[in-house]
Amino acid sequence: MLRRRHQTLSRAVSKVDSFIMISNVGGFVCHIANIIVLLYSIIFYPDSLTNPVWAFICISTLAANFVGLLLSASAGVIVNHMVRIMVIAAIFDQ
Image 1 (cartoon, rainbow, N blue to C red):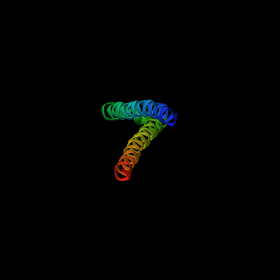
Image 2: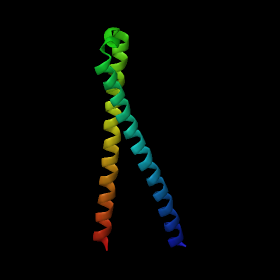
Image 3: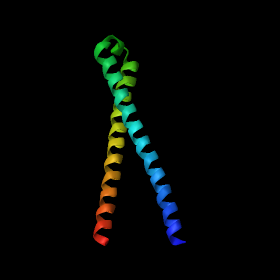
């Protein structure tokens, strides 16, 4: 009975892990695409930045995308680090 519960829990964690991985990659790709589009518009259409309100919106959106990219990348690193610690602990427990 304990083994069945463990297997059920293990399958559920595996499904959640794959969902989180896909979500993290999707967020990372969207932030990269947003940064590319914003940099393209800033570089090739500098006349649009003459309006101070529009310039503030572009710069703050760019900053928000950089922060989101940083959070997305750090979440991936943290998850990878925790999984590695658990694998190493499981190896030494045997």
